[in-house]
Length: 145
Image (cartoon, rainbow, N blue to C red; front, top):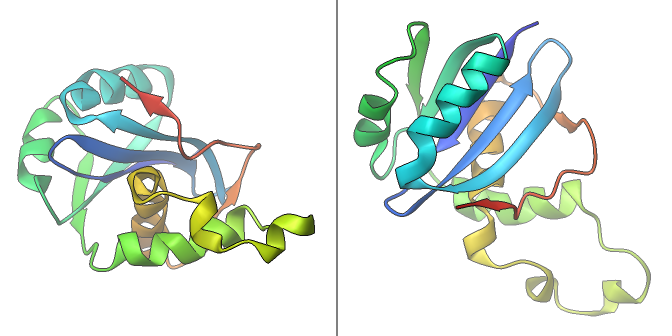
């Protein structure tokens, strides 16, 4: 298994994705309070065989990287330019609008504050140069506080 964690870092919250690259599947996608990232990643690497962590190079990436000092494998900083903008498009690829909802403006279905996990997914997809699918119906708006 080649499990990878991708993080879209932020001052108050981070998007986090756990995926298996060999299977091209996402197993976890959450938005987490930045103060809790160290503990959550520690729990993930204890439960999963994580081979590397990819961190977006934006806001607070250095601070998040420093919090993950305990991870003895590879931590990569990767370009995250325009991921929040691109996350709006990717959201509707993952969760297409159907039925009468199709007549409503797309903005009704998504709020910018809920895009962090999808931004982390885009960082990982860009790094791996492939699209990933969801293992199950994952709610990308899940907050871990």
